Image 1 (tube, helix red, strand yellow):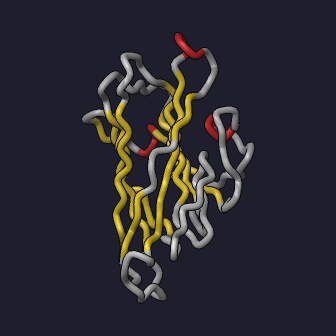
Image 2 (tube, rainbow, N blue to C red):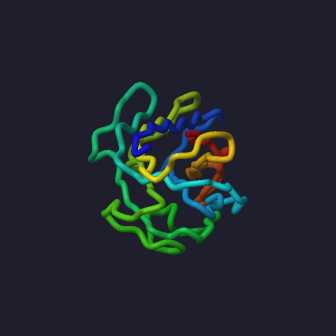
Length: 173
């Protein structure tokens, strides 16, 4: 194959409250992978290598690169929960670097001054590459991607991060 695939992550603020300190952590597909928060078996048949972030949008505004921070981790095992310092930009459960080389996770931290208003969407578009060795096709040959997101609302939750992991999505070749 050796072809690129484009992913689109969309999270909508369906609450009546503003969200702050919004973070998305994506775990790319690989053989033997598990969900990031839920730890469910994803059963990917092959890996997809990270290539690039195409865009990060809040509402109708595409963010400039200085309005978000992206870091990468090679960790394939560690689960996160709402108490993990990783949501706060720390090296806690995972070790994060500025290099995407060999990474299985990427983290996007939206600038703390940017508020996600009710009904606004956060959209991240990124590209990954299916390796050349992937030749088989069919329902048994799927690479499953998943992500988790975290946010705060200081008025309601204090310093607590709320964390969720939506259902996985697959690339089928």
